[in-house]
Length: 293
Image (cartoon, rainbow, N blue to C red; front, side, top):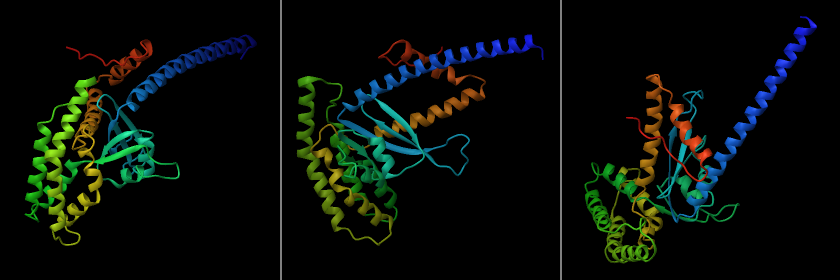
């Protein structure tokens, strides 16, 4: 290689390095904008006094079939946050719940019970409430072996019938919201509280074989009883965690849609980049791509 060629290659390398540095700076600037947008959303989310939390298995590419990852989701009435972690432990649940205040509605998975207890890091600011749909599911599954389950299933059905007649509250503001919450509280005290007492009395009167599905359903409910009845004193709390379960399904459906798009030769990254770029170019807003006709 001649001296001239060496100088030319050196100049080309310098130009390439300068371009790379400029591109890195541009990407860093855009990343900072997205981080700021994420922080803004988290700030709004933290102000909500009710959150739902749940988790599910999540397949990560290139990690092998034996590697388990989990999608953790926390949803308020307005926002949804999905996070991927390689663990389903109580410590991870504590990280996910973070400093949420107010009520966090969860299922009876032990990690949530661990996460909402005081630890070396201090007390958890959240008040846990547990999901009646999971209780109902366990008695429904045990019903084929224990016909007595029909009675408690009917009582839980009456709880849901009371809820169906209650007014919504979240879309309201000011005095209208307070009036709706007061009405929900009064009706629950009048109608739902006696139903929960009947359910508890029924459960204590049952006899079930150790290890049976019926016994497990009874123990599941009674062990969580104090937090299953939080809704009686917290009128904003629903009976179940179905809201966040729907958000998890949307996450899985989204993943399937992305794979379908790839199979059709389309670029799903294009539709993911559009809202990200919109958030960068218009701070304080998050927009989604419009459906193409």
